[in-house]
Length: 534
Ligand code: SF4
View (cartoon, rainbow, N blue to C red):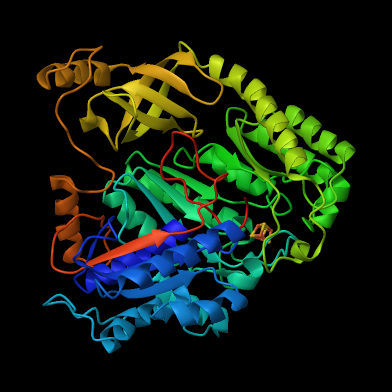
């Protein structure tokens, strides 16, 4: 969610004529911003560390600083004394005015004037009375993001959460659930698909509650996914649509059946377990039992037999006994996850459980973490080994660490490494799997891509075993010709997709703080950290 927020912030700054910079010490940087995340104290501590450094360097190199994102009230008061600007993302449309008031130079020819163009209310039935939450979110959602990748994009469909899990601060920082108008979501998805995007993730803290805040006037989540599936059929293009995160209480058979019906809906579900013990689930206020979770997984396996199942688990939650941990261990074996993001519990300020004793010692949390990690590997490896010799459709998304190799993922988001020319970045290719590791596989290009790939590698001066000399093309950050072209095209169309990559006077450095260490897909860059389910 933070990455998606930062793409909209970058879009506003780019509209003012600023260009992104990864280097906060670059002498041209005049704006420095952080998208904060309050789910972990460590992430917030990093925000304090960063602003102290920035403020120290201000006497040498003046810059305006801002912080936005998930901020608890207590931190907000402290941030006001340290940052030039502190604002909720819902006030992003006012950022150009805030910056102008500070007298910061705005690159010539760009006004960044967003007033009056973005209320988004035209997407709704004219008769509908808008809730204050929806009124606040519409202008933000309707900002054009500066996508950080041409091949993958994240589209927010909902904000906030009504679940109040005892370990989570999201309902306090992001507020109650509010659904983005489906017509706007579909417009953004269509523009991305027409622009060549290959993997789109629909984002929300609790996606299967989509539409429940306006049951009489908005689609349900399965209804929205059906519309996306139809859009895929009409487009004739190859792309995949993911969503994260669903809640086990609200996921329905109807949703799983819609996923089975449409090829563009990726056969992948990230279904947070958190604990395999009913008493712990109750203390976590997860509002579902193990019986309910078992039923959802049984429906999932029956309706989508080849789909991948991911999860989140917390070990060492306040009061978790050895016996309760053993129940989680059994659940991990029972559900045979393809991937699990396992977190050692730490109290999150603002969440209900932060008032309870954090009574599982760190060494014990570590032991439980290691045991689950080993079980994950034992359970996932046979799935991956069974892929050897078979051909999979793979989206290649980034250069791998090994020279001459690229990384990507299958439809089920299993990381794949393949020796291929960088011209394949951002494309789907057929890959024959040749070997498997517990959490990833390796393969070779198969079919027409293999022939073209060999020719490209030869032309580029490398053979099938040696590293490649040239830099090739990069689709990730848009620092290439393709990136510039996409950006220029976007400049003429306020609704079309765009990605980073241009040079002009005035730079802005933006940091996404608090991406959770458990939330990154190993070898699969670009997975968003969704604040809620960690
Ligand atoms: S963990 Fe997820 S479902 Fe629970 S309160 Fe946080 S965002 Fe909501």
